[in-house]
Image 1 (cartoon, rainbow, N blue to C red):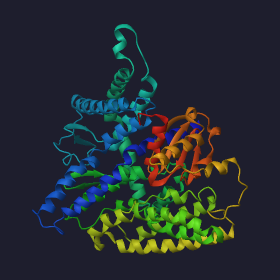
Image 2 (image 1 turned 90 degrees about the horizontal axis):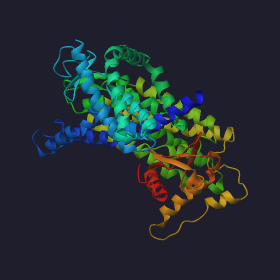
Image 3 (image 1 turned 90 degrees about the vertical axis):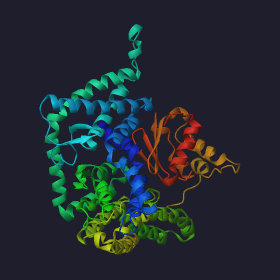
Image 4 (image 1 turned 30 degrees about the horizontal axis):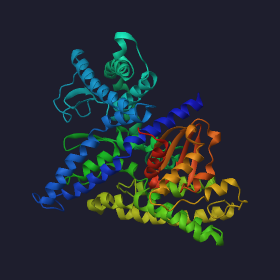
Length: 522
């Protein structure tokens, strides 16, 4: 049962990344357009101001409709086959829920007076897409996405004979889902208020837990990265009422990131919401990991320093600029697990220090986004120079702590490994790629497939921010050593799921692998 629960969480975490992959781009566009349309910087009525307003209003619809996006994204990500049809059924199911819940509230006499979402703020109901419904935020999208995916995976191949043949396969999925969604819409009217009370209590607890809560949040966010479950820590705080819920410009906004973006576009707001404390886990990406990287380089054997520098510095720069840390972190997470835990503790502590210092920054990715989000808001609102100063201190602390622990405990970080005699696996790693135009990617893909045990051993391929996630029939056929020669910085195994770390180039790698496998559906 424990193994099954772990596998279920892993699957949910993988599927949740499908829609989340696009949200950093949306957030960055919203931040840039908010600056363009801020009268403190740009004259009202100017072309730049109007362009900013147009872009912000256009792109912000993604953030205000996260519930639908999570519904479709989860069903698509969790469907084992016929993914496009699963996504379509989930969209139709979502619309059915809106109509069914709204109709039931009216028939049961449970409608709370109010014509707009602003009128209903804090009542437990809202107006969404023209429907007066129970306010479940992104959670209804998550619930329906999971429900449709479960039904789809059970019945998408169900066929009937004779006149009933038209109701087979995914049409049957739609029929079953529709009935279940109607039941959920009725239950929501009775059950969700109690659940919402529990979510509110948990949110209040995290809000009142102060420095300790921030430390635990930061620590878990980092230490769970090898498992892939860290998404389940920060996602609900960034995008759901767990991260806070406020009214901005007459609209109810939930989640730390939507709140920050909404307040950023409103020049009348003089102080940012405390939910910013959930947006500071990028400090270690911009600063802490840089210190750790140079410590690893410093501790490498003399004859390997240049090699280690060439391997780690590009990854450290990527982490600093855009917040992708795994290509560097996976060089020591398994070879020095104690160092990984201490590194996670340091991360949690410095997020706590930033909170205690009164920082109200949006810093969950890298330095580029950090500048776009925070500098235009000014020092008085964000306190961003204090955050940067603490980041520089964190970099220094990571450098000296990493250096001390690596030497003291003789940790086998990059460049300190014991040299082994070259065997078949090493030879496979060093296999050169062809220099013919267009050949390297296809050859790399074939080597990856070979390392995964061949085409017949591969069930599905997926990708997230940095990882190629592959489901295999027989994990014992996977040869980790092969992946090093294809640019991988590490491999994680979880049952029949293999996660190969490639960093920001993972999409290119997945495309090449899918092409080599002949996959036509994502």
